[in-house]
Length: 415
Image (cartoon, rainbow, N blue to C red; front, side):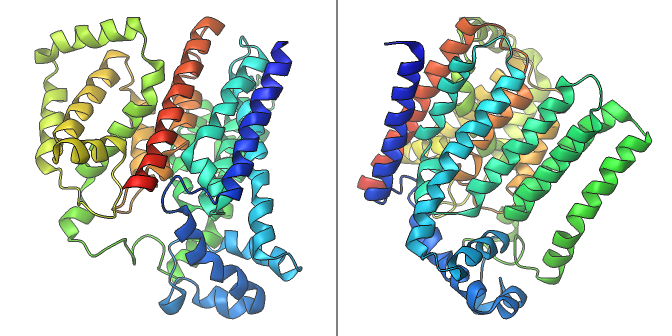
């Protein structure tokens, strides 16, 4: 069987698995179905009385923590005579769109890697519990991810071009704005992109054009959320104290553990030796040690329906405390230091990820596959030099996502 036939067979097989996901109403996330059913009423309400629903959205009986844009768009389909079930089935189009956009980004960045191998890597998204569940149960963040990928695509093209780069910066800004209108969390990544554009243009008129476009596109949303204060600050998953709600150390530890999870496929023998060398000289890493101890001391993430990520739940499930999570956090800091990930760019990205998840709850679905995109396109962009290295990374990602999907099914079925 030729390489192209193998790829076609694999892609078809994985897509068929999505069809079966529809047939069996898969919800490997565990909360996608309930989220959709809770927000389903807004599609009908926007279709029947747009003005009143828009004015009162997010308040009282119309409580919501999502942007109304996604439900407004779906309401047009519903109003045109397409049933809610049909809308759910049409949502499957998000999968090939996701794969294609991811593949296009990979082709821009990895010109030394064959297109077929990049497509093989793209198919790993079929195994993401987040993507599978949100393909079956429509939810705004799925399309936020796709639009964010488009913004990354034009960011990559911006650095790929030698001339006429400003158009790519405008396109990046436009698609990031669209992603933010669907899911406002994505808006925080404007900090990173503006920083990179500033490094390119400094205080020139071109940077001012980009700033002006950002403000122009953001103003309607900022005005709406200011008038309708409901999105991040009014509601939470549960009643919690202020010292937990504002505790940044909870986010630092849990988000670091999630980054560590997605870094696993990049770890090879060379990196293991670097980790060992860093650990041997840990006594010299005064800042790292102090930072680690301070984060541990102030960590007070609440148990219950607030998420916490894979290592938090493993730690709680296996030994009934946070000890395993603390070990992973310590290892993540050593790993970041060993492979020189601690720099201005990546610290800025980490700040963006904290701001991206301002609410107390930290669910894996918010960061999958976002962390994959960030690590591949914004952190390791030019560090993967040959196909042999890339093949090893791809195989590990397939194993990683297979484990993640298996654990998700186990959690939903038995816990």
